[in-house]
Image 1 (cartoon, one colour):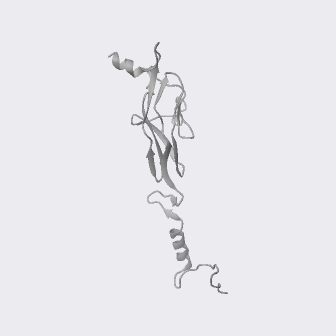
Image 2: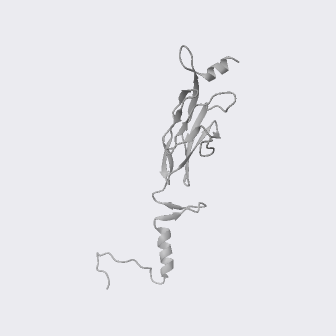
Image 3: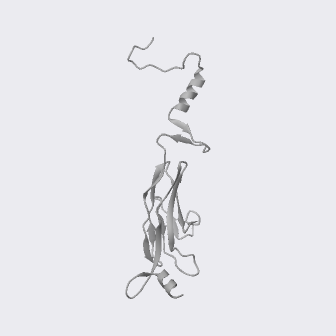
Length: 165
């Protein structure tokens, strides 16, 4: 029975087009596209990462905890990595003994701020980078400075190391 005018009917292949070819064409022209070179699928709702919360500059006392915030959105959910002075930051995901933890939100948590001659100091310029298969987003720079106690006020330790040379 043929559908009446104005009613919804099934769509079939045009005359002379085999059904498997027609179904494949519908699949390719539908809501699923193949991402070049990725081997994954790009859906209409997928989106590249974007930073929605940028880290802020911090001045923290040696040995104290600190958090550099970073939040990214995208679909699929982006992975977040941190860089200090251009070098990737090692976190507990790389080394369980690390004093730095990558939080589920993407923020970088320091169990204690390290600043000394024997260890690589935490002081520096940080950025977070969010990535998914559609691209990457880089946050604004945030500086982390280590404060030294003084009878007057807190000042950064880098002030003393620069002025004493």
